[in-house]
Image 1 (cartoon, rainbow, N blue to C red):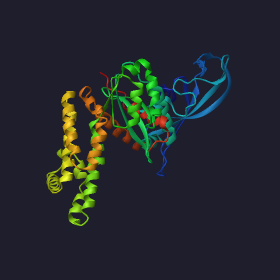
Image 2 (cartoon, rainbow, N blue to C red; image 1 turned 30 degrees about the vertical axis):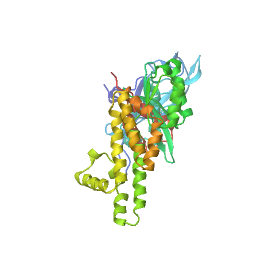
Image 3 (cartoon, rainbow, N blue to C red; image 1 turned 180 degrees about the vertical axis):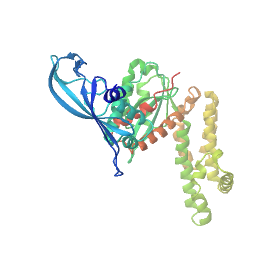
Image 4 (cartoon, one colour; image 1 turned 90 degrees about the vertical axis):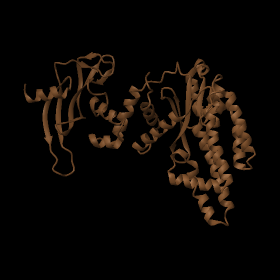
Length: 410
């Protein structure tokens, strides 16, 4: 076996023979080592039209194309491929089909596949540098790969949904992710968080699918709830503890802290203690260090309004521990009464607002869903976004999200 035939066998360029082979070693000038291989069609292999994939016999003209392949022998591999434009009785003039090369590609299928796989766990820039390709080329390769391999989700058995938004760009620009909580399978991603933005998902569910939805866990974003109630007549809306606690922290704890700090303008030492207690009050007590717990106790002992707001925050979280709606409602009525008699205006305002939507909290007794899965997905979405230094191509970004969460197979 001669050297060229041996290289052809190792290369696996089906239907082609090796011509000239050259190696160019870098001389410390920052360039990469390269191997150039010239490939000619094997006359013993039949020609095939790349459009209709039928065998053809007539050649219209010859052309050349430089192709990148996987690195070999410690160097980048560049192929000078001699291709034939064939005369197809059905399609007219067309390039011949090459088994290892897509129709208009400038990289081999195996290089494209390898780059796409690496893009799952590496930033595009690193993959591009690894193979000596441009950022745009690698992004296009990965996007084409995702389009080809990610199928539309099967919604025929979906009965539970989770919905949440995530920031897609600066300036309060959001996108919505909808998933199946039990399998962590992302079903839908779209730009925006309005009713009209998520409506196409429910239209895709179909009438039977919308009737099949039993519960949807979400934060207290009203457009989500309005659309779910309009589209899914049998669905219960379930509010998540994480978002209710976050809302309580912003609208009650932080507001009371600011009001108390303003009230203590004449006592600067106490005022500074209250002003600097934001994260001490918002963090989970179990996660506090011993020194922080001592500071928290001193703060609560010194300020009754902050203490009342803090105690009711912990008590409110207990509402999600109930499994019987009657017991949960009795606990809520007691909590609501305490809040309304507290004489703390931000707390009373929050309690009134939540009381009008308490159905979403009590629904947790029947459907113990939460958005912790969605929060985990949102954190992974942030990582994906950072890996590409932000996305301007929504389709590609959303494909990457769906690729990262195909669902847990039972």
